Every structure is written in C-alpha cells, then in structure tokens.
Length: 143
Image (cartoon, rainbow, N blue to C red):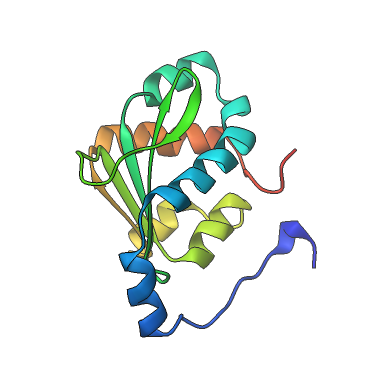
C-alpha cells in the first residue's frame, strides 16, 4: 500500500492504556511533535505565514489515545509549550483522522462538520491555520 493510499483502521486502545497516557507529562510528546513539524512544515511556511501563526499556543489532542501536545511557533521554529497556560486554539481528533489529514486523504472541513475534528478557542486563528495548511497541501509523505 503506498503512502498516498493510507487507510488507517485500528481498534480503540484499552481504557486502562488511555487513562495511563492521559497522566503522562505533556512535554515529551510535544517535543517529538515539534521536531516533526520543524522538519515537515516549517520549511514550507513563508515569512508571512510564520508571522501570522507565531507566538500562540496550540494544543493538539489525539482523543482516542488520550494524548495531548502543546506547541508554539517563533522565529526559531516549533517548540513545546508548557502545560497549564493559556491556549489560543485546541484541536481534537482521533489518530486515524490526523493521519488522513496529513496524507491529504481527508478534508478538515468535512471532519469538522461531521464532529470528527473539534476546534475550540480563537476561531479567527483557527481559520488562518486551516487555510495555511490547506494551501500547503499534504504534509506526508514529505516532498
């Protein structure tokens, strides 16, 4: 199966595993996601896009895994953001939906209207982020 035809279907993790993951510190997965975005997304962002998206905290929630990441972007790239502070935008979806979005197989608007993707917080910032990502196209596989 090629990366362009990824079909992800996996069972939900056991509730005990999800409960354990929810108690883990937010910093390690946030650091991993920051490194990935610095490699896959940052080089494709223009100066204007970086300026619009910078200095705000975005929380990514992988709902079926109980995983949370907090990120912010500045002149040097993506960085983990501390837990407990203000969040500009919170985005939640299951892992399979995120993967399909990254591969360009799913439309964020469709997921949003089907309630499979939830955005909370600054809606204007959310639209800027969504439109920027839509304009860039799929993040995976990398070009």
